[in-house]
Image (cartoon, rainbow, N blue to C red; front, side, top):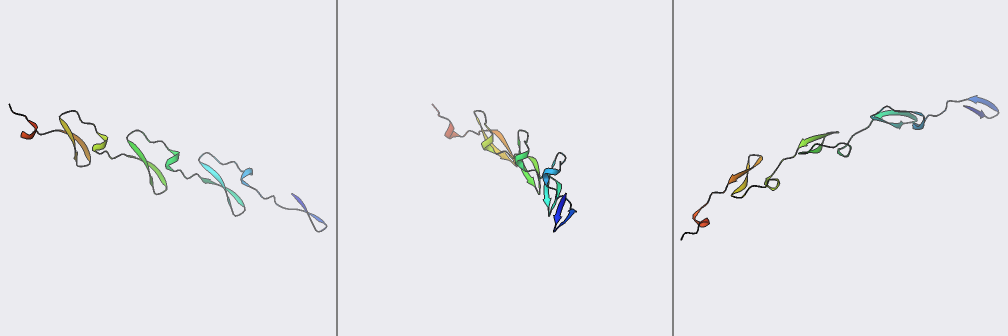
Length: 105
């Protein structure tokens, strides 16, 4: 662009901004000093949807879907059984009856 310096016209470079730059998908424009640059968009767990049975956790700077660890609170057992943890897995096991559970005639 032309600018007057004292009484002399001079051509000077136009300062570019992010409005002058179109970035490809997956990136966004950021000003680095006085230069616009396309930089990758940093994703978070708010940007992804995990399938049922999993949840999002950040792995350093990358969001990842990881399986949800189930507990006995997540399991409904049928009558006559109760939930017990088998290692890291909740399982329904039969309730062992004792004499306290039986009324004799």
